[in-house]
Amino acid sequence: MHQMTLAEIARGLADKKFSSEELTKVLLARITQLDPQLNSFISLTEELALEQAKAADARRANGESGALLGAPIAHKDLFCTQGIRTSCGSKMLDNFKAPYDATVVSKLAAAGTVTLGKTNMDEFAMGSANESSWYGAVKNPWNLEHVPGGSSGGSAAAVAARLLPAATATDTGGSIRQPAAFTNLTGLKPTYGRVSRWGMIAYASSLDQGGPLARTAEDCAILLQGMAGFDPNDSTSIDEPVPDYAAGLNGSLQGLRIGVPKEYFGAGLDPRIADLIQNSIQELQKLGAVIKEISLPNMQHAIPAYYVIAPAEASSNLSRFDGVRFGHRCEDPKNLEDLYKRSRGEGFGAEVQRRIMVGAYALSAGYYDAYYLKAQKIRRLVKNDFMAAFNEVDIILGPTTPNPAWKLGAKNSDPVAAYLEDVYTITANLAGLPGLSMPAGFVDGLPVGVQLLAPYFQEGRLLNVAHQYQLNTDWHTRTPTGF
Image 1 (cartoon, rainbow, N blue to C red):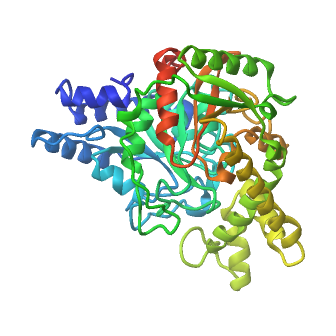
Image 2 (image 1 turned 45 degrees about the horizontal axis):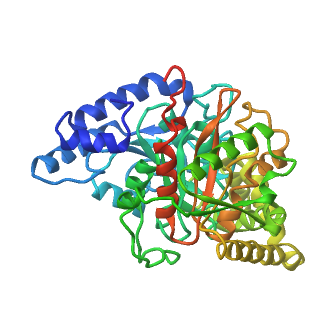
């Protein structure tokens, strides 16, 4: 049962081959047995899961149907879940039980999903390795000595290890696509505003976007269908019709114009990954796609711009965690200033503190114009590059990451080295574009991903290309040894 995709589970439930309750019990037992090796979950919700599974079975018995009705998933632990700990991977929120459900959680629950638990993550989504979590690092099921990517590493490791078929995740600078690449999954960052951010604890409000992590493009289409849509509670949500993503998977790629930016193939890219990307290009050419070299000239400025904008927004968003209203509070504060300083000093980890300090500095009166304003101008140039490119091509293709997953602890002493791993992913967040990573092969036994980018609200195009690619390759079917 644990090897089934979401699509296969939907067919099995519809054909009454098994019940949601049976499947849920199998997966809960599997998580209990195997997750101690991975540390991919922060909280397990066995009672809720069995209750939801029984309710889903009852709905099916009454004639209801739906691809997500009875499907087991997990939520990244920054989606608020009523009455359940929502920690953001931080000591600061270790005792926080959300009084309401995030829109993503409530939409998926209404569709009939079964919540198995909340997955581990980099603290407040700040990291590329899932090593900054207060609950400990997550391990990559392909090699337990390596990172699974971040910040959605818990969701990625759990799905890759077949502990469940799919999970929710978020992407601020690549936090869905990079762990997808590192763990041999398909991960989709939708257009900014496509999925509601209400009840999703913010890191950088103009960059964060929720999306699906699964083994196949077909599964991502199913999960995104349940997540997407306008939400009046979210001022950044866009009122744009949601197409039937699954219905669009089988379109022909004949004549599809794929742009390959020359800037993607510079000195920082592992040549073995470059070879795998070329192999992927050849597969898509066989399916009728037309390849064209393009240029994204401002890509070189994206990392410094991102690492000004994101920390600036983080410093503002995280100012609410002060030990007064909710979250961690220090023992016996001497006065209000002591309460603030010690609560925040004890509650936040090193990486979060680093980014808060960088952001506060960039927003300070003497440096706002020199740093934050300039970064926003670069952001516009990055977006303009993409708009120009999409006048010539339908999608853009390249590597998801410059290197395969590194060893646990290898970049802890050099944060900038970890930041540079986001070079191919952050531009989509700066521009608000949809992006997808799909399995493209292996280097030294570790998975590698190829990234696809599309114009706004063209998630269906990305899913169509990825699905057709996966019908003709088998990388996405590989399972890590021992799982």
